[in-house]
Image (tube, rainbow, N blue to C red; front, top):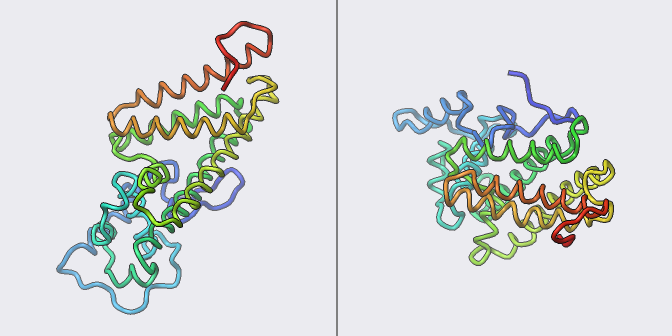
Length: 263
């Protein structure tokens, strides 16, 4: 299978090379699945010696741990998941875990970085698609996110949002890291909104940075509600509401009546 590339031609990270468009469909990689099943088999001896140097390979121990951690923690809480559960899912011995991560907290921060990198590329793929009108790019993102959640029966949500809800029991280091991820996503979204502004799709005096912040506050809530209700309705409601708000602001700027121009 050819390696996946982003729109700029860069090879996407090894974690997601098998099919980066899947919403963390790690187990759909048949080769990885076979490897994980084999290593879980108690009758098969584990390989000994130092871990291989190329840890970007999908079947390398560090990569297996990160992939398993992302899959588990988009569904469950960080504070309730044990290292043993991650090891069991990844089929990796505990010694390998501590070879790459000093602690569970260090592992959690590595997962934040991996997820943030993946999702930034995902946003660039959809919101940066210059061959599509800017607001259609938002619709494409909505459709992809909804399909991704549906693939796992709405059991998996957003890792960054999930961890944010646990901030009361997480180390302080997580707070700034999570906030920085949201700021990055907001910046990419604001760029798309400014393109919509330049194309005359939204009001010329709209505050795109503020709209982007509003978008991520609302979208994360919609993802949480979709996971809670196991339904796409919250995603659809927010997506249509946000787009309607943008259209409403555009109409106001053209002198047409609307309820409010506030965002």
